[in-house]
Image 1 (spheres, rainbow, N blue to C red):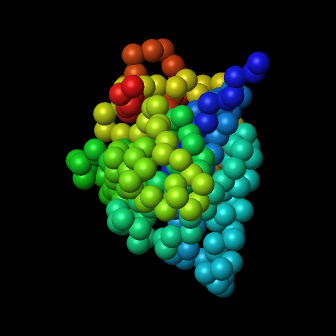
Image 2: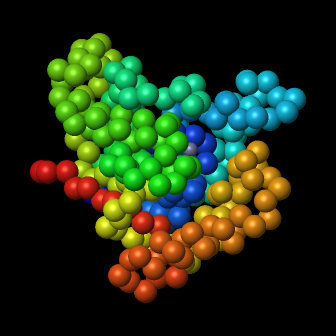
Length: 236
Ligand SMILES: [Zn+2]
């Protein structure tokens, strides 16, 4: 009897977040696990001259799908919430709880909701903070409890679900490092798929390498390039 593959779900705010944050780990883990991406917004507030909102959404989603293909991801799910307007509301949590009950991941990845230094402007995008918090609040107490959003159970055929591990990216307090040295060029390719964001930047590869070299230095192992996370194990 073959064991079912572990499932990993990455829940993020915008197309490209996942590729900056953890596509290296996904490239490696997709060899043995089933990977799913859920992107809450489709980046529709981007300023792309001559394109309608509908065209921007299609372009950003196509770019994310292409990047996911390189990383060996099974499926990309778009929640199509408005870009720049995410809030940790009951409505967003319901969508996230439903998504988790549908995908049934063993492992979740998202932004670290515990970051509170506010020392770097890009790191604290309100959508990133809202997603991190909404995912955290969905995991406990809602997702495993049939009394939260009971219509999922009663009329939509879903079941309460328990996640085993959560990894937070962009964390101020990493405790888990993944060696991405061998696949760093492939990771850079996933980022380069987002042409609408970085089309003219020739230095993106060097930027990514220097960022992951810095992350590696903070670990205790001799890695050249690493992605780092704060890992949280759920009580059994
Ligand atoms: Zn983002």
